Amino acid sequence: MANPESVLINHVWKKNVKKATIEFILKMMAKEPSNALKPTIKEIPLSNPN
Image (tube, rainbow, N blue to C red; front, side, top):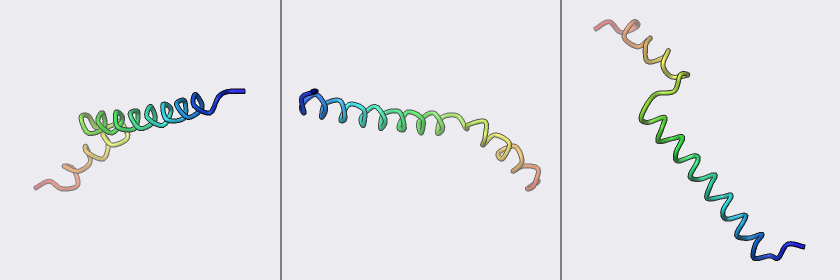
């Protein structure tokens, strides 16, 4: 049976990895719009010529 200490460390580590991954994804999205957003950005000048 796994000792509670290693289970807790594993849980915290996984949580931190998940948080870091989300922060990384948000940083990347802020830096460069995702492909899903690019069509929207391209359409804005067309629908708003001035």
